[in-house]
Length: 490
Image (cartoon, rainbow, N blue to C red; front, side, top):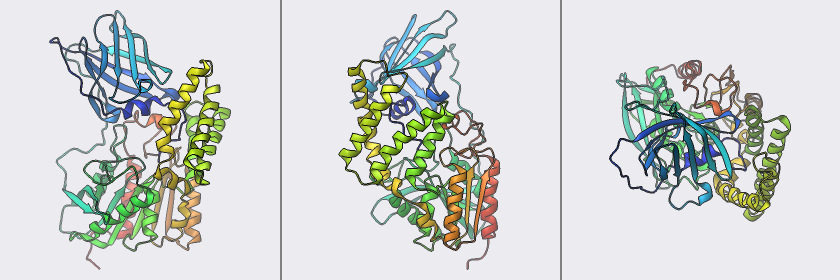
């Protein structure tokens, strides 16, 4: 699920989105000067980076996004002052990320700042010794070869002409095996559901395959090696893709078609019931942090909870939630794009007028920030995905699901809060007469099923664990209980 929508600039999203840059020329013969640093973001989030600087050129790497050696512009890379800019070609100057700091005697940065969209963020950095490498994120659960199972690159043809590229992992032995497809959360996701240096679906697929369950995971349409258009797709389109993938899996000779199901995470937990409500191919569903409430209510609730977890007082969090709801409701009620943008502009103006970092800025400057922010948010707010997601009521498809369902939500999940969403799922299954639902709130786990302190999205990158073993065992144990493992075809 997407994070709560914020109607003003969020540095994390801005910088991490700048992964397409113009090619810059590099010069100089001296060894680059290397630094590693952290940008302190609102709500306690931190963005780690490293830079390699020549006198007038350089590159930046942002491990959390898999960005490596992105060319920099306007570089002053040696001496007592460091200056450089992330300046993708064709982007307005206001969106450029401008870094600067003075070099202290001990080789650390002092007075470090990042300026972007009229805001300033503190930067701490340290110069690395010759030959010293920047620290890497630790992801101890990420599986490494050799693997005790078979892996095959596959292509799934979808009726509208595009194709999904994926990886099928098969347990050792003849089979036939029970099998699942993994359906990712919202946003353009690769087959591993790569996020903030984690690869949850790689870890999950490895665990399930070792347990005797075949797994097909795939790149979203238009992502990675899959073809198709992601930008125009809605949850309904992703359901079409999921069904195509499941049908492909069920027809493989190594798979028992009577024992195939869907494991969906976040929005994938919304898509799985959409498929099962219309098709008899899936024989069971696993909903990992799947929603049990309408999209508009969910985004408003998650926005308030995340704001509070990020340090906002209750009054501010409530005010922001009300502002978000006003925009989202206008979309659900069918307002024209122009009318939605008018509401969005009013909301942004009101926020900047009271926000501590912008309220005292000149009116003309604030007006410019309003227009920049509205322009930045417009594509997401008016996207086909957003319009459809806000209106979907998961109960409508859940009531038509006739197969066993396992629904897991982390106790500390702030994006799909467990109390409201598990209750919604339970009520919908009961209303449809499905008594084969198993619902669990996983103690201490967040939206990604990591062991967490608060559940705030700002913790995701800092936690080394990718997928709590208890959650992995809950999924594999239930699937094996439902399917009986390897068996004869029926």
